[in-house]
Length: 140
Image (cartoon, rainbow, N blue to C red):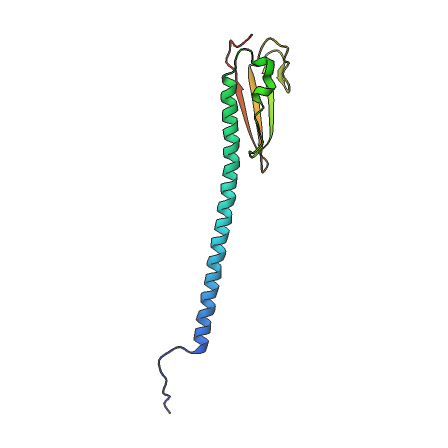
């Protein structure tokens, strides 16, 4: 006995194809959303680093151009405004040949420090540290 069958797909074949298409679509969606999440995290970290590097660059530049009477307001010179930035904390240490590294600078001294170490703590447990040499001949 011969069956007369028209060309086409059976219901099981259609359901199988739909299931495979759904599986591939869901895997593609998951991949794209994970890639977007990773991209955003990378962008946020980049913004944090850029904020820290900008602050470090500006502070270093300001320190290299200190006026001769800078000792009178030394802490204010190097303490940038960290509001509205990705910087959590800003530390400075001062170098003198006679005392070495100290955490605070004696404003009554007639000299400015020979170098200043700047440490910027950023969001996400990251920190940047730079030592800025103050040009010689800047004594009062």
